[in-house]
Image 1 (cartoon, one colour):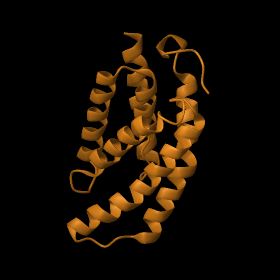
Image 2 (image 1 turned 90 degrees about the vertical axis):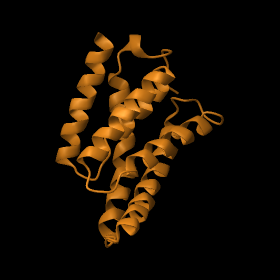
Image 3 (image 1 turned 120 degrees about the vertical axis):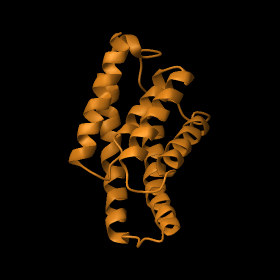
Image 4 (image 1 turned 45 degrees about the vertical axis):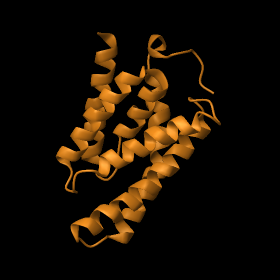
Length: 155
């Protein structure tokens, strides 16, 4: 029950933040936290929920969020080979990859749609996301209750 309350609160805050700052993906830090702290099936369902939310409210063709979260999922499990799953270094590297993915996936999807690619806007969105989202992850991860964490330390 408390776990559902925490995740429900996170989702509400993420939706609000995305309405205030469009172009940012505030669900990605939550997905990363679920990969770090939850069991695999929970992360799958949470990612599916985030993808449906993103795709349903977005203006691009279906697939952008699927590409983003799929890339984040595989990069996280590949990165766990070299870093601790809660390592700030891993989170920063994943965020850099996510920001590059945002830029290139936007370019790719807009090309498929035959739309103009607003290079400057997407570049600044990607750069801002690269700089802001590690702090969002850090704040959200520090607010995760002790009893929800797989173990009690963050490296």
